Image (cartoon, rainbow, N blue to C red):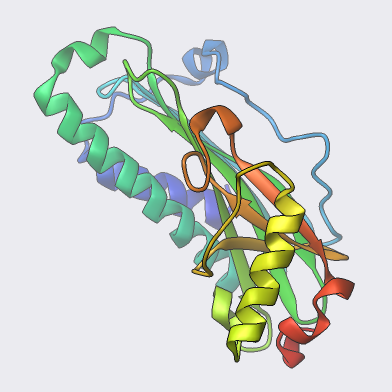
Length: 243
């Protein structure tokens, strides 16, 4: 059992306050975990492997599926990613417990679920960048809420890279330019951003992907949106230490 698996599973057990009825191995094998597996398009660089946490919390009628790439050469990075995902799980369980207190019938309907699947892993000699899709739904809800969560990491400083750590925005011209190029990449009628903020982004070999969740810039019907911008089109907008 790997360190990442132990961390995530341990956190879930703490959240459960020892009330969770864990299914046996046979029961878990028989349970039809939603969207189980990793996308065929996911390419793992050398030195990475997949960790999986699968659990059915009978006390909450909830499916937990967390699939996370692990970088075998950095315990610090893996711990940072684990904490990052664990915070999302904690938030979900907290909101679910509040709803269950108000409506116990949720335990009798279709299960709630919290599912984490990786969609992109990138590494060079300066940065590590993950992008996940996290889909969560409370029992009885009309539809799941789907979000992108990216984790960008400075290998030399061993710290998380935030939006304004990576992008060199010094003037109104820089702001206008980056907004324009993101909206051009979105390329949808009447959908775009009108200001810069801490937009979810992940780094890929030749591009930067700007990621927008359900409802973030468009209606639910539009789905989650990923807008890719070629690095060669924004060289001066990327901080020198990350070019």
